[in-house]
Image 1 (cartoon, rainbow, N blue to C red):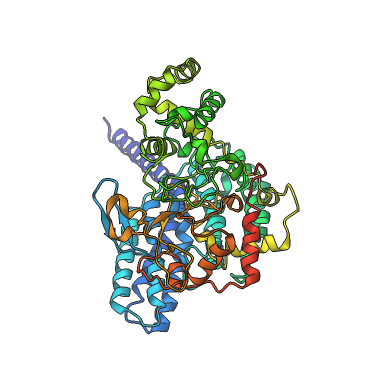
Image 2 (image 1 turned 30 degrees about the vertical axis):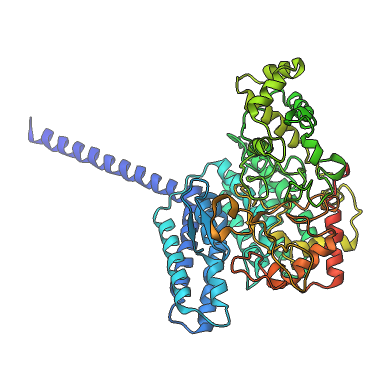
Length: 599
């Protein structure tokens, strides 16, 4: 090879190497560009920023003056609320811990590995920091544990969000704002729930802007942003006088409608449905919450009408009881909204018969929450010596001798689980007792304009100043916590044995304690629905109160503590409500609008 050829070869080789380097750099630049414009990565960066700020402000509280401590807490809390939509969706367990009320936590009872834990998080810090006498050690400990939890979340942060995850995240937060955010659920001292709800909206706007290129319709994008900004303006209001009814009707429901437009614009398909309907446009309809989410038999919706019909027949059949003298309908009378209008059914019962309307929307059953499903609750009734007093095997034997029942049980279900199938049919019938046909439902859906000023005020007080909705969550108005509906809460409110206010004694029924003997669970009972409450007197687990006026006076005084029945575990989020007679009447007027048209 000549010197000239060698020189040409070297030049060619250099050019090839240069092109290769440029190609690699171009590929690397492209990946960097793609990373920068990845919506999930942008959301992750947003999330990281708020986590970092929350940690920073928490850590800066120690050693400051009381005024400076409060200022830094407020900033930490602001950043926590800004990260709430993402944290609450992607890490539900940690969100629940960090936003827990200042109440003892009991875990592991069912597995007999009971642990009693002190709560951590922002509500605990808030209550400690704003006490008249500051417990510095308690404050520092709670801040330290809370900050470390946030650090751990940040350290392990790696979001995996598909389009449908983003839709679920947005929907969850909109529903969270309506059902807990504007009620004062997690702002026990500062009472800044409306402002904090506006913060969470700010994050929703950021998430939508990050995903702007995902929209094919700019109109859908702009309309949604505008709807949220209008809601933020509405939230700039005094807590006690805020019109929650109009806010839900004029802001929350339109936002839910627009979110459905977004998922259509994005052409999102959902792999399944969680507790909230994937096509949710209103909080107050039969379609709002997925009933099958609460069933032990999620997939079994085939021939459901026939199964409901079978369940209704079994519900009314006395042959399910040992002496052929009792059916479910004996205690749960339809005309009384499926109660019996008695203090207790008979001398053998110690607890009042609750309504089973809307009972499907729970994760715990019986007043002490000892069953985890409707199907499981039926076993408890069957085995109870003071109720059906019979075994499931005996019931199966009786029903399978009835040709009509035998044919339905064997043809409607494609399995041999006769025991479960009987219970599932009965539970399926009970799951139909949720009609959402009350005056309140029709008005907030815009179908009627018949709600009086007093009734509307009553809802606004119920969901605001009176703090009823911090335990009785809309739209079911029971203790199953939205928007995930994973937990049904138990409370200790200090119900007395009698109406005697001079020498009151607490009800001797120990509630949840009787099951597992956990001292911190004495007198704890499940939070029931207040739907159809005007038709379900008498009230409380022991039927001690005959009227809603008596119930409201009990709460207005501060529950058991207000009667002088002091106990460190009472869970009411107030000492007393200081409601006027007019305000009490308005709340009662609202509760009366929750009566379904069938009753």
